[in-house]
Length: 446
Image 1 (cartoon, rainbow, N blue to C red):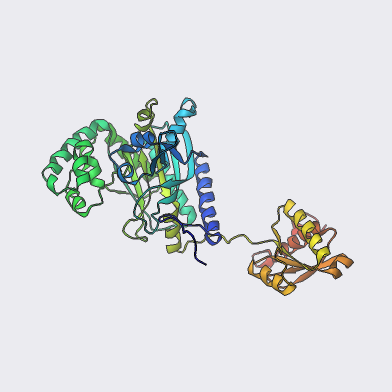
Image 2: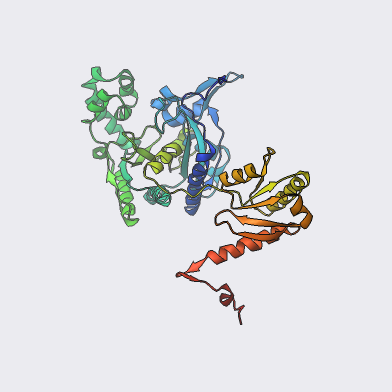
């Protein structure tokens, strides 16, 4: 039978075999963010197009080529979010967080949408972990947010990442830099791609981020932004380096990092891996001191980063990072007959109410098939209920790992299950290779 449709190009289903890995990454992300004082924020999947045009920048590839934009039934231009920062900044202003004590620290796990060529780890619908720190001007904040990202990677067991940092200055020193860039690129204007010819007048720094091989080759000899920093921006960048050194975070200065979004100022950074091909950026971020003002608020120094979950998953699998084992049922009840099935339903409810995972057959399988199914699910324990067990009120709780069986009362099943499994866990627990006497620990043997 042929499918009437398939998943749209650039999208990907997440199956249960991978979902638990994704949950582990996401829970680790939130946990690490909370250690640094960040709280989760959730924003709508679509916003007014103007938010991204003003916030992200209408000279960027994201706005010019990649956004999913449409008119709704009211004739308003709507865009699916291509990244997380602009929506978080809009929410910061609209919901009055700008009036609270600074800094305001938020984090998010969100889906994003960009119309670009699908490739490994680069999907048209992808998922992002990001953090935003609103209202912090100190270079200490720059170092801390980089430290947060590194702590996240360390917690996941990712190795071999290279931290590259740069400063792209403030509007004051960048004006001189733009003049130098225009002079340089104008000499080879005819060789630039059509997009970069437009950028030359509006935002020449965007040419440095062009993916065209010819433009990239020309940009390799362009003036370096670090040579044009004003005293304040240079001091800020030097302080960031000082704090990174204090945190024992190794870094490399790369004056070619400009990031792909217009809102960045001063510090920009990327964590790069050589394990996942040519496009090895795993995480990118930096400071965006002018964004809140651009969106209609008061000038608010801010910074953040974002990283793609799909690319992170590829990297972790490439490096064979350890994931926790997927959850398995605590108990499988193999029931035969109507009375046994009713009792299985009752026991399962009691088990679930107490926080245990409990499964029973839904398809009317025979006993052998049910046991085989329990084994396939990697159930920790199994019981068989039939007429004999219902009549006697007793069944056998079988440990599926070692095959041992223990008699257990059906009437007091949950408490019995707790005592048996706890006893098994204590029997397996050893300290320094010897059985540990818990009674002596609590003075119960005197």
